[in-house]
Amino acid sequence: MTPPPSRADMARAKPDVVVSIEDRKVVAELLREDLGLRELPVQLTYLDAPVEGPAKDAGALPSVCSFFVAGMTRPVQAPQSDHQECEVGAFVMGIEPKGPLGDRLTGTVGWMEKVGYLAPGEAMRIPRNEKAPNWVAYAPLGSIPQEPSVVLLTTGPRGLMLVVEATSQGRPGLPPAPLLARPMCSLVPVLLQGTPVAVSVGCAGSRINTEMPDSEVLVGVRGDALMELADAVHRLKRANEQVWKEDVDRRAKSLAAHPSHAKKRGAS
Image (cartoon, rainbow, N blue to C red; front, top):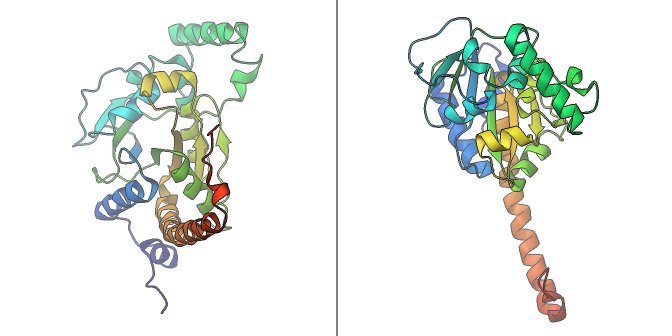
């Protein structure tokens, strides 16, 4: 029997189908279950002006990526000016490095080059927005009516395995996800500039400011690619469960036939 079309299939067949807040709530829970997430995905929505709903009391935080964490538990929104505590993050957002902000950025980049963290000239190759948003709303996916510009989630190796598999099947809207390095917040402009899905291993500052465990990485999804990724991951999760069961059974039979092979990894 042919399975019924998924919500993502319907959206591709009918481009005018609107992804509702209810759809995003379902997708948020589906991704949390399929990828084994500790927290719901966070949506970032770039705004020209503040909107009703999300709180405006987050205030300036230590880094741009700190807002990612703030949006995990409740909707918040912040003006461009609140994102300037981290000069590198502000640069990535597209904020012009002028005045004291520019002086701080120059000093920080110079120091990072001096200690060997950045190679000379590397900072100018960091992805950044051409124009900074006036406001940004951060919220658990599906908790606000505004459509996400970008969706971020932190996952472990098994969840990452499914994301990589989902973007390696040749689906039209999901080319292979690039692996990005420092700074972690540069994932956002990479997505907004056209990449549907990308993975970031983070950076020293992001792991301090977000307290993201060493066992996790950040996955970013462009807002309009969310449904297709969730659909692909869900299909692969079900397929992996069948392969997993088959491999467990085969391994058990092999070990029963060859007990000496049952030595655990790492055992002396």
